[in-house]
Amino acid sequence: MTGSTATPRRVGLVGYGLAGSVFHAPLIAATEGLVLDTVVTANPERQEQARAEFPDVRLAATPDELFGRADDLDLVVVASPNRTHVPLATTALEAGLPVVVDKPVAGTAAEARELAALAEDRGLLLSVFQNRRWDNDFLTLRKLLAEGELGEVWRFESRFERWRPQPKGGWRESGDPAEIGGLLYDLGSHVVDQALTLFGPVTTVYAESVARRAGAETDDDTFIALTHTNGVRSHLYASATAAQLGPRFRVLGSKAGYVKYGLDPQEAALREGERPGEGWGLEAESGWGRIGAGESPATGGGTPVPTLPGDYPAYYAAVTRALNDDGPNPVTALEAAAALDVLEAARRSARDSVAVTL
Image (cartoon, rainbow, N blue to C red):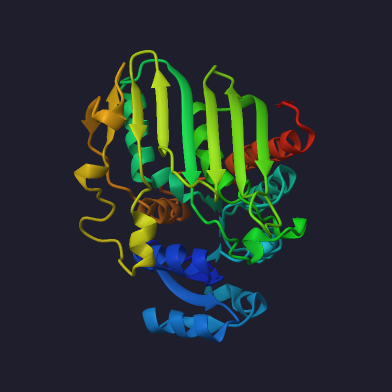
């Protein structure tokens, strides 16, 4: 099933909704060493969409059809609804196939660790798609931290906010716990993963998570406060009810602070049909964040910091290297399990109005 490094590895993609069609399929197709072999979707319109962009792709209506051809594949990507992540990843691993799973990899940390153990036992790659590690602002902040530009970091504020006063419906906003919906697990997966990646494990979690919109079945406005082992305090916001959007990042240190507004441009570009190539992930100077001390970026204070290009293609490039035993897994299931520990603690904290110690 695993091909040589000279032969592109054949990828089966399960799911062609937002995650599959906007993120995974274009990024797989843009990656040297990978080829999009099969797309699994029962939706006729989505089948037509996949065929229009990828004329040579095979189409399957069910995952069973895909796994019936396991010997013809080298990698399975699970981009279907959250409730299907664990069973589909399990089936793929038991069929001897490496797997990429969209976030969240599972509904609980225990399930994530069980998947990790299965992958380890089978000697197979199990990677989690946490694309926001390759956002332009995140890459820029990592560089600033590595160079010590902020000094000792005291507080990390991260916001993933939207203004969607009317629920859109669908499984992501379902109140059924089996769907693993709500912003805590949707956008919260991103902001928590970023915080852990930057500042390491946490000791205490406090959260507020509510459903504010009329007709909302699950949380649409969530705040999470983390105390990291190293003393950094992370304040994380995920909201669909923010009438005024706050800064994406506000990071305060002993020497300086960094403030950055706006979202990385890659998702919007992918939605518009743009594809990775020269100039990918670049941001206009007007979007650059600012660094300084004792000044307000809102009134022009601080020094502009050129934003590094966003680089979602780097994820699948790293997956390819890992499959070729030429590099590490870019996002492990155990890393994802650590984030799920925090998300589960946040859910308990919000429900019981308590701070949770990990």
